[in-house]
Length: 311
Image (tube, rainbow, N blue to C red; front, top):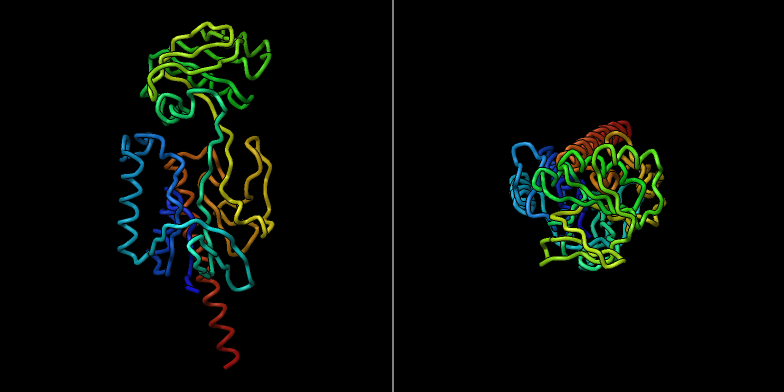
């Protein structure tokens, strides 16, 4: 069983940022990653100052290379279980190895659970999009659709209208709209289609339109919708950490620095905030890494003082 100062689970923007803070603080750190970042479906990142348009794998590769300078080690594996003791946590990996650490940072992100709609999954991240801030500029002034699956998307539809004068909202899966909402949308020139969408059309990953249940087709160049966010935190279930109910589901409860209800476990990025983009995840990861190091510093002094009194 290998022992570390800190283990970071997840090597996306949040996890690598946390590991960088720990490595620069001379903490012996292990990064464990399953190799399936949330934004792997997108060709480019946007809204990332200084890195706008960078392919997501390029940013992560550069981050991993930077960590090598600070002695941070990385391992490709998935976490099977985590157990906690008063002085450490133990992480068991699917490669059969076990590792202990005094601090654990969870940055495993989420999975977007997509609706079972023919043609949607193969276009996800390319012509079917979820974030107007991340991808909206690239489809500006085109024929845009918004597939409503949740009341949470009402605001998304209004954000999309800022990108184009040609916007159609497909409300068939959501049901009746509030008349006041409908009036506001029509006042801004948004077309509302109540017939359910049954298929996306075109040579994937491109989109040319959608087919409705009544066999009509509506031409589109891109469509926005939302998947149901599912946090990758099942390996923590046995610890019974505090959770908070949000409009997107139940997520780990954390403080401003990312600390969970466990004194040795922090969490950052999409695993606790499904709406965080890359810069927000980087900031949260850096904060969690710095906080974990700070907690270890305090513990180092406490242990040293206790040992001095016993001597």
